[in-house]
Length: 313
Image (tube, rainbow, N blue to C red):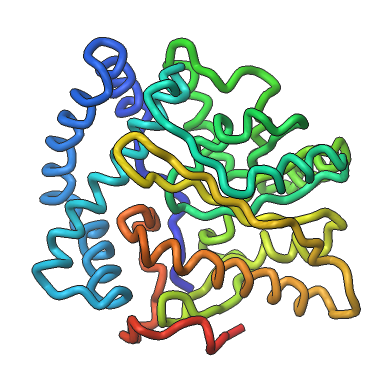
């Protein structure tokens, strides 16, 4: 089955170059430098360019010319997210305004001390969650693939004055020996809130199917099975860039999907459907912040006006 190949875009060298630029010249010169990088990728990154074009053309119904322009904006938006990430982690968060819608739900989850799952997506700027959630009293964790963790460690080691700090955010890398399951349960048992992505999977992983932006798509089963089996509250959360210097965090009221008489698959399916139903309006409003540069919809069905009314599971 088609899926993400396990490689995230953005290299440690790129982070370091932009970090130096931000420190020496400021944020806007870094954005200008990004424009040159975007031109390069728009010309030479054929696979990502085609995926982006099809996203706007098929899923959102844009015309050919509008889709072509949207691809450039898409690449630029992704680069801006990377630059903003470097700026905030390097201690320049004062350059941005941060708005909160639902932060109280995450604070309450943390204060109750039962642990909890925060399901997000590769949409907006999830990497800024450490800053957004600085007012959440308990421990915060992120579950990610082992190669992504190695890249993050390398990146943070190269950035001066990084603001994540030891112990503030716990990164749990998913291992082939499944040792991360033990760490994850221990972390939740300590009352921690664990963030996990619900939109991306590696080849061979167990999947569900749902309708998203008008077409059926395979999505990872793992995050939603966790929500259905762990006796912890679950919240959906994303951080969207609304203007040049303003980010907005959204989080839903928590729900315990493990409760009730349904079986695990039915509970997991309910969580999955709720998540993508909640996410879709945001992606339609801010499509340039959708950062899945792979064939998310392997079945070629064009119907941009469809909704999640028809669920395929």
